[in-house]
Image (cartoon, rainbow, N blue to C red; front, side, top):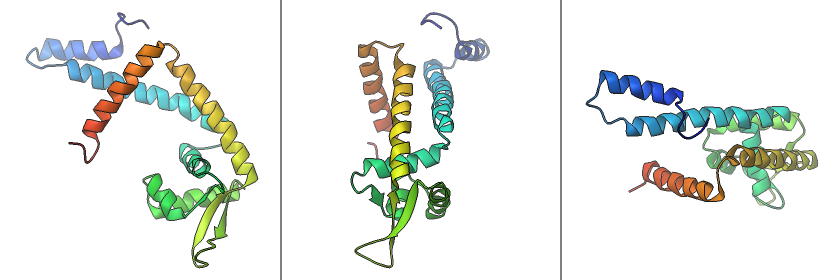
Length: 169
């Protein structure tokens, strides 16, 4: 669909414009398109994870461990905080990933009562493969935009997100 073609958001905004001409609808159109974009992009992203036998949350755990650098291990509480999830939810994810052989729980060298979560060799191989496919997929999704458009979109998204996130001024 080109820039000037009508899309489903145009239809919704047109209906509101007809029924409530007193409303300013520009923001509704922009937010509506962002919402539709999120749904479509998430579907495309999930397909990559599913093709590699992962759910989104499992990818997130493996990616957090991989990004942490050598030795690719973190405390489960740090993982939960990083991924903004409950400790109980993290335990469930770790159980599934450990059963799959891609992470292992090990005793913390500094505190034998605590555990750390570490990528196994198989886990590191898997996340390296999946993150490669994931970034290629995201690049493909944005390939319809020029380099300048991608930079502009990133800048605009950064400004808007910064103004809406908790703690923003």
